[in-house]
Length: 138
Length: 138
Length: 138
Length: 138
Image 1 (tube, helix red, strand yellow):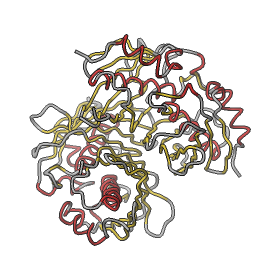
Image 2 (cartoon, rainbow over the protein chains, first blue to last red):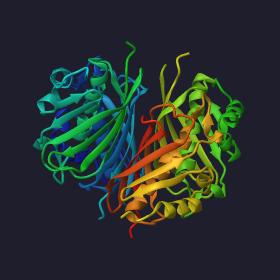
Image 3 (tube, one colour):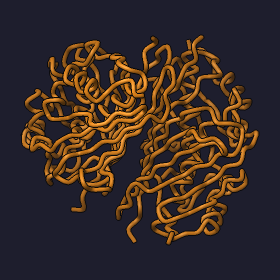
């Protein structure tokens, strides 16, 4: 069983990153070690060429990692990103983004995560990210 | 001489990433191959523990890289981030963030950049990022 | 069909990185966009604590990315790594390492790759790497 | 005062990574939080096009980070790389490589490091790396 439900994560997100909730970001699925987040399309996310901005995808990937970490350790608010790496692969379609995250390693002090983002209805990944979270001593 | 002034970059930022301009992000200095951007403190950037959110620092670092690239190649709107890596080093102070970026390499097809972020009035870095930009054929 | 067989890749490896071939590194499978490389265990790869050294895993991951790129573009000797990122997840067992690589994106100028390394006979990943290769104009 | 001298580090390197010592890798300077390592040129490090191989530069960067970490914490053998990121910037000259490393952050559990590599006698960087080391509880 995951230690956090999508509803619990979305409530936490609204509290911690209200700007993300306002932009429509939300978790749609959380399993133990895995999370799916969605970001609806908004004009404010565009940059020239009609591409969704890099920072919008970084924010989505980071939040997806956070949800995946919390699925494994529960509501530990002080878990923080220590490193984050992303490769942008293709121009996203102007539609909803779907981010699938999973835990690669869950240690006592450090979690390592992977996220793949694609455009709803399209199979190919538009971005791939990895990152590490530091877990505070309990 | 840089191929873009802070005023020109700020006008471009307002056009391309209005949310960043609305949050107060702006270039204060641009030299050939170097750029300094600032992000004033806003309550909306906080996350638990009073820390400025990771995504806010990622967005600042990415925009700083963009300014540094454009200082070398001029207003090439379709230059896009292809990879981005950031290490979070220390908890920022609740004040303005200052990001200093520089070009590590400017090739015909690819630029590599480095950004260091610190809190205004404090010497130690709070985050360090590197990234690559793809430059479209002219 | 892959544009290179394991035999062809191993011949290229012996020519380009004789030290890797001498240490037993070899491709065992190559499909279009995918490659599996193996690195037998050798005492010289150890570091304190009995762990296989980080650089030995980096070399294996980088060679696996090279094989995966060449599976898609054929024998293009001047394809070069432009960036490389690795997370070390768990202490490897003192046995053969198996690296599975795949292309995340194959563009005209840039390929992005992912590699997962595990110890033979053990399911959990010991390292996860991503990287980019620059492809010379043909 | 650094907590390790170049002589002490070179003795440790010979013990832990004899292949590196045999290839001529050595520390030439260590200050608190900083280290300079050198890698003489050897034909075995070449790859097509006369370029020094990526893995040879990765190994040099990783060892330089290790020396910089130990300059701050002393001979802690079980400090291990947890993540490593490198950007290759320019083709090195066929001569000695010089790697300069420094600590970006030294925490109780995690150190973050930066390394710049250049060819002896040439100012421009050929590679830039960042990485994190996990520090065991003392």
